[in-house]
Image (cartoon, rainbow, N blue to C red):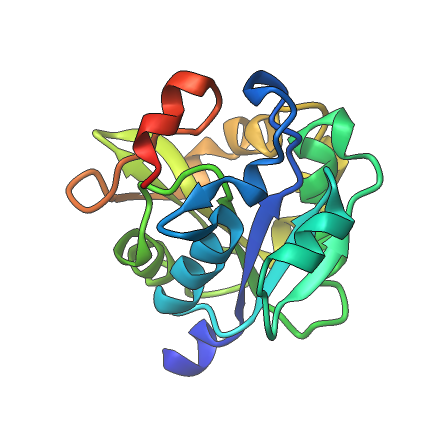
Length: 199
């Protein structure tokens, strides 16, 4: 099973411009003395993703200069202002020739989700047809694991800020939900009030 898990690439969506945070890109918000994006990449690696692709958007040049992201594949989304759907399409597109059999997708603005949740969802992988997601008290959340057999369908339906929501709703019966509420908190850093969650 370890060999299979090595074929699951971490895909971090970190393109958001932080519109409700006064236009501060979420990737560069300080957390534990470092940019939030560094923390998010570390979580994916510690959870078992050997390779990590990162989708950048808002102030991408500044993020590249200020954040230390060695070994990551950095992908620019020129259409980041269209919402998460465009970043998901760009990110999945970057995996086409990578040999990856699945993508474990996480969001840069969820620092309450750590390596244990990543490892649990990663553990649900068994084939390129796998669909799995973390659940919090039974409610689907992130991270989400998309087997390569689903990438084309997800990319075709990912629009606006909905990401893969429409695709997942249409394939609800195929999703393995992995309860993570005991090891993670699925809050987002969206507004000034949410900054209390950062250290």
